[in-house]
Length: 156
Image (cartoon, rainbow, N blue to C red; front, side, top):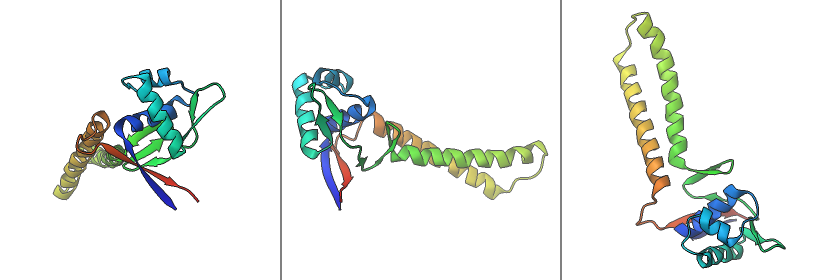
């Protein structure tokens, strides 16, 4: 069964900070680390994450991630959350590296290169650039019209 839960931008930032921290965190540390406006906002976000079942409170009053879940449009790479656009951009960069690896011997040997290969190389450069630019834009400043992130948790 897949459970989808909407996360506001500040709740999203709170969750990502807790995962990156990888250790118990108090509300004040969370406020500073996740750039929240006050400890009460941090505490409210922590309570919401506890209610969702993502965070737990330890005996010392600090909070730690209970489980790491997928977030729609993002991919976890270790403790880092990357927009899916970045993964696609890196794939196109790898394909571009292969294309350049094929082009260099032809250019050094003064052999002709088919126009279709040049066209494909240009398409790869443009595709990689578009995906990487979108990944940077998406990571820096979420679209103000889309103020919610969808959390996908598969529970049995």
